[in-house]
Image (cartoon, rainbow over all chains, first blue to last red; front, side, top):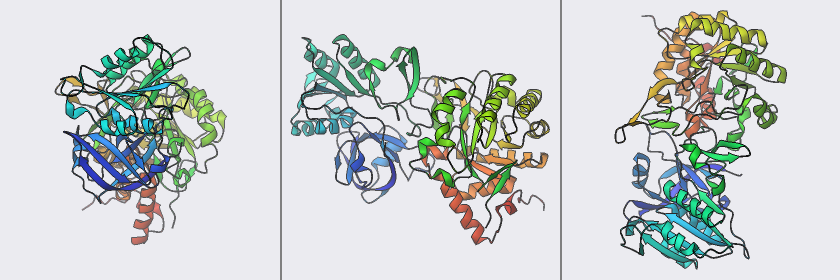
Length: 263
Length: 304
């Protein structure tokens, strides 16, 4: 897999809703290489005593630019959110093994996202020859991101919020389950979001005997397969092994994830 | 200008290597880093069979550092030879293989296997990993066991042997001397320092293994002191490591008495660090009219 390390310049870095921000950078060497579901590993240069890079799903790509949709969750993303256009970041990317893009005549894709998990699915929706339904969930209205951008791609979008402030009240996997019943073949699930949501999507996939690709959001170190921080238990011939979310993943076939072994 | 140094019978084209466990098996970084510019590639610790490693979370960031408890996940000797050796053996720079075991016999057997492989640059004996229950640090913190492991490996191979020292010692001198006497050609100083972090919300340790090993810039002063003490106690060369991010950091280790250095945790956030350090060493030598890097070794002035 081709990857590049380069200094990228911030084009814009603006608040989307609440704690979510959209970062656009000029990354001429990385942007053209990006495949759906891959990530960029970003060194936030003003941070001096927080050492590690931060991994972000690549949201959109346009020519020499790529964008990231992130939530401020800690020191790294706090500092990132205060950075201005013209400032620089160090970026390694594109990294990881992404989604298998649906081909025309193949299975109908059903996307399932929780919060900023939506960002990891945008390129997949854009490059998929087969349009389907995007299920988007969040706690509140502000947690529903880039809904209109998915509609603009010609996808049907079904929104759920836990507080009922937007779309249907409930969790995203309830809306998905309703769609999957009555059971019919020829559909495939693609999901990105919190681990609890991914597990629920995996269970629904098993229940309805559908293939599912899950993009895992694990704590990462080097992002390049060296430090072995981001490992997850993956079934092998006669048991399971730890595989790297950054390298063999972040996208895994849900049938191969041995969630129970991680306990 | 000479940057070459010797570690036992092994010549390094420059004194900058990488720390075991921070550079995978070389291949992972090969698209971003010209490995042939390094002094040597040092691979992650290998024992006889494959190792699954510890549960997650395995690492936690702290101020200017990282605590890890990976648990030496690895492919074992056969897996390593199959998956990684074809790539490493054609590099122009030597590969140093970090080895470990749970018994003295296992260390010796792994040493024998790599001796028989041919083309290995040197073996680094990991007697100081804090994150495994058996093996590792127990061999590095008991002078008698340390001597036995080094002596058994010395018998098993003619390859240069580098003993990777634990920092968790009252005094490093007797351990350094024990490794030297038992036939070690060099010392790597230091491994990670035992450490722990707690999440005050959940009151749970941050690592599944509860404790781990601290690395990164925050440990550099500890490593400098250990290198300085060991250098006074032994004649064999020392590879200094602990928090190196820049050429200045590397020079500090050389002045303390190290013959070579290894870049560790910095590889995780800046894979080019090793090459940047080499470039910086050249600049420093030019500016200070130093013809031979070896002039710096042990150059610290502690007298009045």
